[in-house]
Image 1: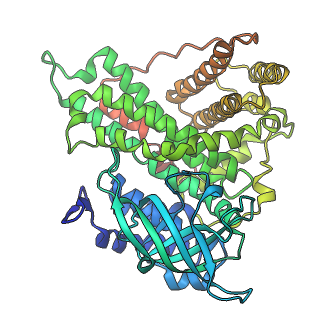
Image 2 (image 1 turned 180 degrees about the vertical axis):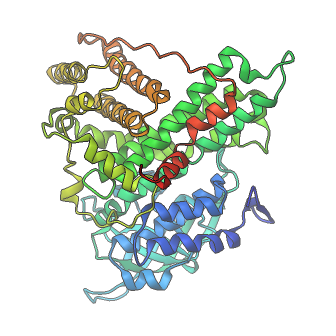
Image 3 (image 1 turned 45 degrees about the vertical axis):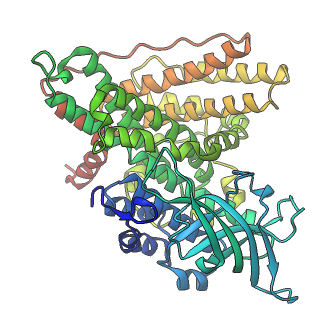
Length: 522
């Protein structure tokens, strides 16, 4: 299925929701009764040929349905499995500030165990909402309540909604995003006042699902640019052979490969204490990097990317929706900042061989896990390990001193605290971003060691230079006195007579791993 939309008399060219639901059944099967986080999105992406509007519409439905799993409602989950859902969270006046929602739920009786409520309010910028059979709605019983137990979750049928109005957007134009009113019955999910707890439990694996959709936009768009510039003619030659274009494509291919590896590395360790830490990095840092890469890819491709049928421009534009929607990338980065002290001061020694053995078993594979119901006491305390020691263990042939790097970051953090800036939201965000870059360097080191391929050494240098830029920007913008870091020079590109094959090999890391796994041990 490629670019298959229908001409709806009310909404124009939109997703074919009948086809969407037929192909979404495999995703539901992967979620219930056994929860397989990665498989639930892989089934959908394969079925929809990685088409962003379909993947996002399907993803919205399975995320909303997963609230039933997070609330431990197996009977309701079994009854409604396979239905089209929406996430009825946001309201125009609140965005992601859910504690300020104005939708009200009133119990149908005085029974303290009443499950049936009348829901009244309005939701805004909701995907699938006009076509959905059910809405997973966030509401309050008390309009003035704003504490952690102010929210509850309800399943609301389509018959309780009215006055839909489509909201036109610049991105994902074939989706149907609307605002609408709710005025009718709904069923309580979980217990009264547990809405925030259910949302938090659901949102842990949801970060991996949303990030998967963004990550899947990258490889085909870069491949399309490579193919285009390998066949286009300028001055009688293919632009792929021009030195400046060749270098840009090399950097794009290397970063596309690295971001893919970073995602699957995080997924491999998601069923552990790293669930939230890696998830927040994916939902902010990785999606922003992917968006930057796709925009650069569009510039390199040139006018080809402007064509309607080209995925080069389409994926660049559509990639904005995942990290940017209501500032989710900011919220996730602020969550990471809370781990700064523990991340920098961890003394436990990790064994790279043990970690890589676990990656060999899990990388790129869809394995059932406990990401939905892992205890908060576990994911709020990630099992961090000695950063500098791990850098030394990997022992990559690049000029990176892990001890000196951590010492520099500690000095910067100390200066920020001494100036009383550590409670400032701006500096919290900057420090959270710095932690993400530090972790990206570890991921690049893992990638080089995992594949034993010196082609990936420049990915290490690229991530290190990302740390340097972020670190130095904090100092320069704040007129701080901590000593600036010095970036590294990239290593020379390997020579090649077949740039298309060379770039494709760089990006084909998943298949390379699977082939290596199938090779007999000698």
